Image (cartoon, rainbow, N blue to C red; front, top):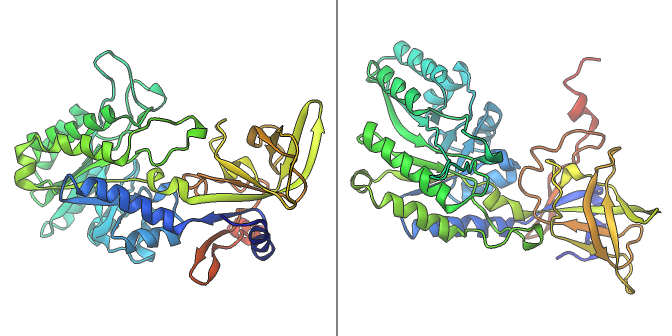
Length: 413
């Protein structure tokens, strides 16, 4: 953990606020989830979810560790190609892919998981244009997470999900594909966002994929992709306790696969797409106290970062944190709200935390901010902060602070 002096030197060099990326923590998480699954099933592919955190340095680290790129847009696809990912090691998901992007991806050799009939029509048009070429595609399967008691386990308790092929649409797709022998379904994708990331949900996903594969695509399936959404190392201070481990997820999913003889015979790769599970606890946000105020009964520490830097979804939970004081502090602890640099009353990075006296120029370190912060922080009032990583020769910037032209360069003046 960095000292006050080290944090101040980084602030002097790069400006405050800033992020610190923990490279070793990411490598540890990646290897742990891979080990949990490969101990139970010999053919496992990890497709890292770029949408979770697409810092190029991090994505290159995934490639060096043998992981694939899981992308959901042309932006992310181009990033994967730019850092040198072989097209065969890129998985292209997402609910809307236009004809040009599907054509480019398939001709390049990217695995494209088709989400809709319209996307399938784009593939068939390409197949008619190039009848001599075989195109291997995936299909995303819509999976119900409503249990036997009628309770939905989908995100936000929705009654049904909106992604992929329903049973009726899947039957229609199978009929359409009979006229296209040069289009083969080699992948089934089942990512389904649940409300609780439970083992029951992953058992349901794995079972559905195995059954669809057995019924329709037994001879052609090369990949069974259960998606992501796994818990990683949740912090108890955020109210997350007794969550499934990587080993729990792996045992649940692999036990399902072991029940199907066709999987044993065909040996498809099991694909998992972790994002939050491997990235969340690898990024810390460092922000400095600008002023301390007292209004009515509130003690407010005003910092130079904002809630968007740590929780852009504006949830109310406190992340793990530490106060790094400029001068050693003593005395009784009191409650503070840590408030940000925007004009919103609800810009509260931490709420009702207990601390010894917080003073100007103290640093506050907020942990577990590696998921959906970098990719979702808007250019609202403040520019995006730099990101640094500790290397063998000290710290280096892997993203500079955003500048005026980064925001306004695409506008007409």
